[in-house]
Length: 66
Ligand code: SF4
Image 1 (tube, rainbow, N blue to C red):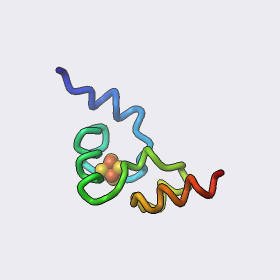
Image 2 (cartoon, rainbow, N blue to C red):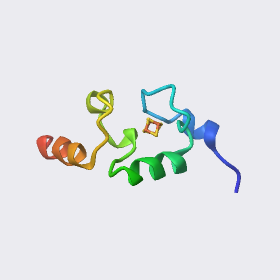
Image 3 (spheres, rainbow, N blue to C red):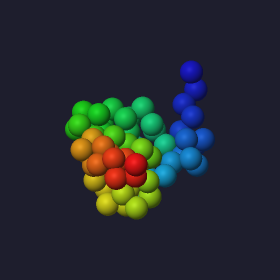
C-alpha cells in the first residue's frame, strides 16, 4: 500500500507545523494513543491550538458543546 502522506497533509488541521508526524496519520495516532491522547484533528480549532490533546480535554470539550 502506498503512503498517502501528501494527500493527508493537505487535510491535516494540526497547527503544530514543525511536527514531523504531520500527514503521517498512523504515526500521529500511535504517538498520541501511547500518551493517553488523541490527534489534534479530533478537536475544534479553539481547543486544538492549545495543544492539549488529552482524552480528558476531549470529553470536556464535547460535554460543554451539548
Ligand atoms: S496531532 Fe500531534 S503528532 Fe499529530 S501532527 Fe499534530 S502535533 Fe504532530
